[in-house]
Image: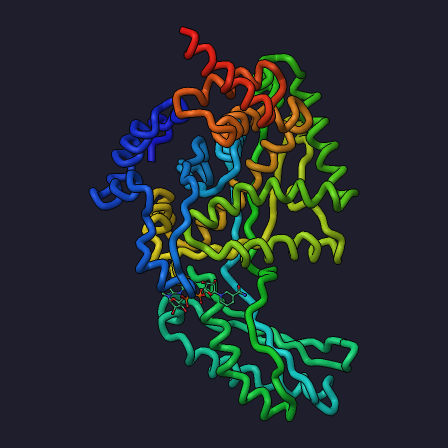
Amino acid sequence: MDSKKFEGFYKKTIKERQEILAKEFSLTEEEKKLLTTETNLPISNADKMIENVVGTYSLPFGVATNFVIDKKEYLIPFVLEEPSVVAAASNAAKLSNGFITKTDEPIMIGQIMITGTQNPEIVLKKILESKKEILKEAEKVDSVLTKFGGGPRDLKGEILNTPTGKIIELQLLVDVRDAMGANAINTMTEKITPIIEKISGGKALMRIISNLAIYRKAQAKTIWTKQKLEESTKGKIKGEEIIDRIIQAYEIAVSSPFRAATHNKGIMNGIDSLTIATGNDFRGVEAGIHSYAAYKEKGKYSPLTKYYKNENGDLVGEIELPITLATIGGTAKLNPMASLSLKILGVKNSKELASIAASVGLAQNFAALRAIVTTGIQAGHMKLHARALATQAGAKENEIEQVAEEMINSKEINQANAEKIIKKIRDKSLNN
Ligand code: NAD
């Protein structure tokens, strides 16, 4: 993909953007139609995805530009309702030196909780002695996964002390390749339960995947030079000053879980948008990432990015977090927009998608920090927010821009002012 074709993308009309996208990614007539029809999820597909379907629900589908990840250019589909997020990610990517990433193998954990054993420590030892046989049984479940190079890899265990006594926690580690893994793992844990119950003499209370995917992490790293940062403020703030402020903001997030929550929310603005665009399970991704934010610092909820200065005094940003995005499975195939997102991304496998998600999370977090410590977050948000308020206040299509602009100029961006301006515009046109 050639990112030059997407320069100034935001200045184009929707139709022009659709045409550029269609040309660059050789979209078929059917795919082009998806972009131009208001409802692109057929209701018959929706009915196969969840229960009690009565309709479908649309969200904006945009693309973030300027991303270079591991030397490859990407256009990144975002699906979300919040203004400024796509622009912020694209801008952060443009200011960066490109992202370098590293991803773990896609290993997920299935848990089996054994209760009612006489001597849990000895029983656990006995179970682990039969590891080979148990893994072999688990492997029988999913020959397709095995064919693609995945399958069960290990069985671990420990004793949990709970108010109702000791419980054996078993963890089945499975390489799920390009899937999220929940169905595959849940079936495997159910399959091996009879053997484990026989060895242990206990009962399996639960058999289910864990969303805390500590073995399936992605890392991304980039540099923002002081020169580019200074230029981005048109020289109003020194690059060194911006960098010092961002590092201080990061250090505050390390100390304050209240700040860490919002710091990580910034990361999720990008990751969730990509997760939804690709038809993935955003609850699973959220649960995994936030639990990791506490797990990695032994229970203290912490930021998932890190900032420091390199020897040139430029800003280095790093992110590390579990990413459980799939390029296969789930219900994504039923949503044509999810397939289109994967086509635009051009990813080979789930690991490549994870490296993109980590880079997007880092870019988004940097953008939020930079905005907060310089112009304030509202400046970027205001234009779209003002437009949304104007629409809510009843402005017609041809009045929205004027109402938004007058609100911004008056520094009073609220519904009452929007209504006042609409009235003024209409009174004026009546008098003309
Ligand atoms: P799945 O069962 O739909 O598809 C995965 C299967 O596809 C594999 O088991 C394998 O047989 C096959 N496959 C083909 N090519 C593959 C490749 N290259 N790599 C890997 N597998 C390949 O999906 P899943 O990932 O097992 O389950 C995901 C779904 O489970 C999601 O929709 C999620 O919402 C749901 N879920 C989540 C949870 C949770 O997060 N706690 C719990 C239950 C269900």
